[in-house]
Image 1 (cartoon, rainbow, N blue to C red):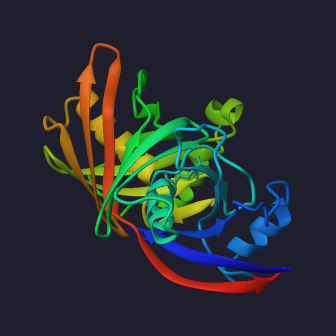
Image 2 (tube, protein in one colour):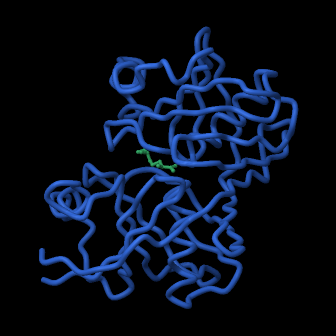
Length: 262
Ligand SMILES: N[C@@H](CCC[C@H](N)C(=O)O)C(=O)O
């Protein structure tokens, strides 16, 4: 089979994007999806995303996300921003979108190369002695440190991701965070399913912004996150039952398109 694909990146978190409205790619083909994401034997990406027709009549499309290991996983914030840019490229949407992903319905707004994505509400934030844990569509362990550049993200991230504490939820993503000022944090993320540090993680920086506010390290309701792949912003409304109206905003760009024999 000859598969047409598009390659997108959102602050360096990169994805193979497939227009699967006519079901060209099977979701159960874990080995093929893993191979397509392989940087030596395939196209190369942190994940693969299918754009499909949604069963929900008010949706513009449906998003199905797979990590680079070929397995379908929980929500991907940067991937969500990239699929909105892809839907615009395919003429499915104009400047606004509504779509369903694994964690529910998302709204999005596109302005040139910037995509704002409304994330799921977050009700529960677990403060541990050394870290904060929360689920922003995907599970995130957040550690505040004084020296994020000096942190061995691969080693320390893998140890926490595979720790006994998170076995029951198939592991967690791990974010290392440095305070720059009350509205700005530097973040590096180890992603489960990629099993490595990625250049940025959308649900990860969302978790960082909410964790910073919940623990009193941030006082603003719009937080700027500096990742190795670029800048993202997260705005939110804190309430009695956690956080609502959470928006993740940043660039999303097509890098190239092609076809591959598989
Ligand atoms: N890169 C993503 C997160 C993707 C999901 C994650 N690896 C998991 O399996 O939990 C993002 O931008 O949010």
